[in-house]
Image 1 (spheres, rainbow, N blue to C red):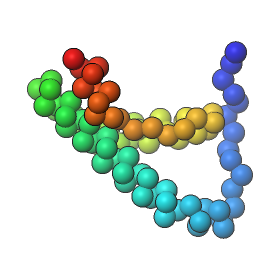
Image 2 (tube, rainbow, N blue to C red; image 1 turned 135 degrees about the vertical axis):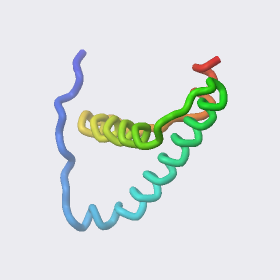
Image 3 (cartoon, rainbow, N blue to C red; image 1 turned 90 degrees about the vertical axis):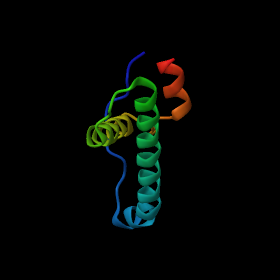
Image 4 (tube, rainbow, N blue to C red; image 1 turned 45 degrees about the horizontal axis):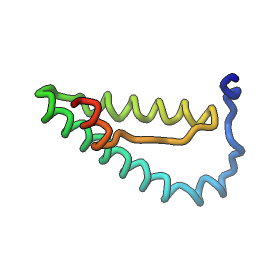
Length: 85
């Protein structure tokens, strides 16, 4: 019926060190996927995207989503192409 209240997860230095390599790998893959999706959309629409805005907005949205218990997502080529058509 309503959104959960925002909350920070339990944090410890050991846990942060354990997940940092995987988090960096996921972040890089998500950035590449989103930018590739933006380039495909540019080719279909004839417009140009702003890479920095794309990545900052994606990061802010994923942080906000995590605060409410959501999961992180990226832009996907198939969905982007479908929405443009």
